[in-house]
Image 1: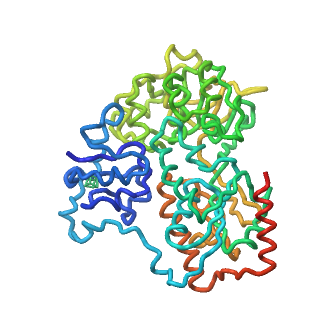
Image 2: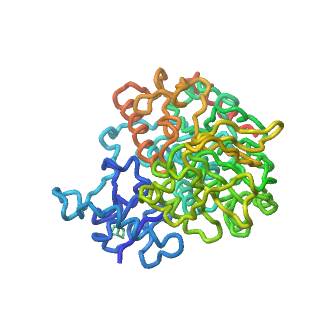
Image 3: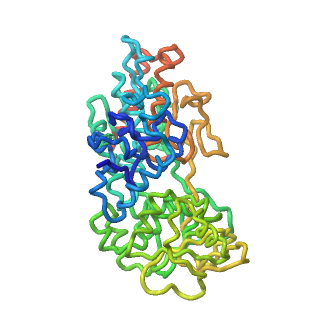
Length: 505
Ligand code: SF4
């Protein structure tokens, strides 16, 4: 009996390195790794050893016979990936069987006399922590981990949905580095407010910025700024108890919420707003959000997609989990017949909507009793309507214009980076310009994660990204481009002042 990888796979590929028979793909060296929604185990090759399950940081791997409920389909999902692929033994070059992916080592650039660096890492989310991990494991560097929030964790704490506890478990992997004897944490310290990039650059041999993409992308439509129109970052921060988000940030007095977008974050928001609060009680949800959900009037969440179900933004595992729920109805609003035609042809993304209820909905009438999530495709948002506050949205599609009343509109069309004072910033991409992670024009500043590559890729994508940036940093030291500075009296004074600044209550 084989194992299977399930919904919460973070694609950090720890399992790939652990598998003795090379049956987990795509590997980081394969073309489709960068776009993979999850990794897959080849059931024809798996020898049932369980090594991958032990290595998985988010508890996403289980024996097939133990899969039940929403996870039951993952045996099939894993097997489907290999339907038209040769087994490891049938591949023309069998050599990689026992070494599918050797985790790249820094040995190539680290001579025995490599100096102990003083490195500041700004941002304690996954990208920052993978960089910390590489620095602590592969060098004798001392690391100062800085975060603007009073608690570490970044997106793991405040971005992952509270009902995905397995994904949040990745923080256990990082905890061991947060308590490492060569790491100091400075929490509640913001670059640009409490300390400048120039001060950090003068005080450390290198500074790695892992500040993410902390704002929601704008829609650019009238009404976007009305009360009751919020970005997904606010909604996600609200149910995760983000210190910047007020308990009352989401108004749940109406019976319908519109979420603009149909990616995984949109699905997360829709799921949390429609789940029975009793089922959320044992999760990591913020107590204040849970209390408000208990008095919520929301019965329907409409997910608006600009394009059809064949190119929806959600990943298959997340939609699969949603369609397997029996407490919430998933309805496709087939307002123009286009979505239905695509679904009937089996061409919707992942082929999962064939079992979903299909209707042409009259949004002028209140939602029926019970809770439901409506998928409305091929709908272009024209305006968020309302006078003093949001009262709905106006959309156009092939069948004309429609108005959908709603008391809350959540904009979930992606994240965007924010400039870091003192660093260059590319407005078009919302990222810091860099070369292999080295900030363009800076002497010792580096970037990693979404502020480097833009807001794409899940937690695991940051592992290879951090390796790239830390590799560049170490190459720079070896080549002499980055010279670790000797401790001078001047530098000592700057460091002392900075230490007092960062240590203040
Ligand atoms: Fe590979 Fe063993 Fe996991 Fe099967 S159970 S995928 S053989 S590590």
